[in-house]
Length: 165
Image 1 (tube, rainbow, N blue to C red):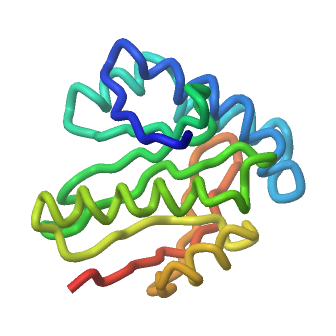
Image 2: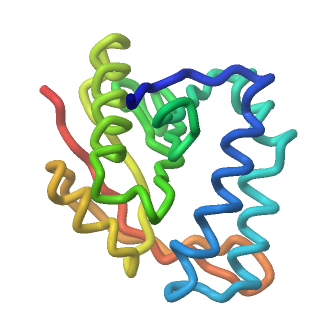
């Protein structure tokens, strides 16, 4: 059975664990292992995740038979009013293509409608195969940006949006 569970501060370690399981596989052909480790330490530190929960970020995990297989992190009204920002959206590689990403996406749409937000917004690495998944869901590339994250590392991203109205 597949289910979606919202995480509180006390369960946010699941996102930390899943990210450390997913990222080395998902990004191994896109960015260096040093950059992967740097970004995991920066973005998925337990204290950082807990602070995000406390400041209004919403985290959900998709579970199959009670075992976490992926997650999504959302922030309402960022970067602008009426936008639901998808900051984090990952499924274990061995679970991709089984509908779990679609379940997480549907949760984001439900949250957007519940909060009366009209647009989903995300950044994705331009070389990530998941760009095609997002396009399949209806997202459009609206811009490109290179973000300097320190130590001579850059995030080379598309900005993608999906209008829900």
